[in-house]
Length: 168
Image (cartoon, rainbow, N blue to C red; front, side, top):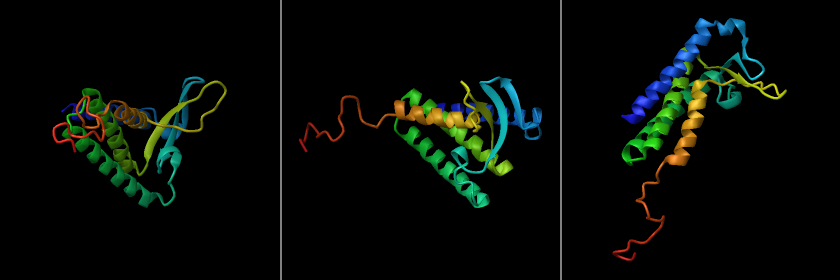
């Protein structure tokens, strides 16, 4: 249940932020908006590919491939975290990743592309890329899985260790 509730909260935050900037602030018409210059601005970008617009060619086919891949990865992570008695932080990380992935899936289904709008720049470097709450969640959730997920072995048991009873 921890995975479900975490995913639901992240998904809701992602979708609420996108609805606010797309419809509330009308960012698609405005294009960009300074929030905390020069560090944070909203820049509307419709991403039809993956990170940084990679694989955006033949976008209609890629849209459905990316939806399918996201759903398969989501199902795999959910199953992995549910079956192995993973630590609480790993389960929360999985929920964060799943909520972000499903947020971007909904964008692809609703808009044909992912709505990216956050732009962070600093120190005289103008970052041309935008991202969204789901992207942050996917990255953070994946990092959390790397840091906190268990390999399924009991504490003290080493990988490839022989069974102490049978000595095999």
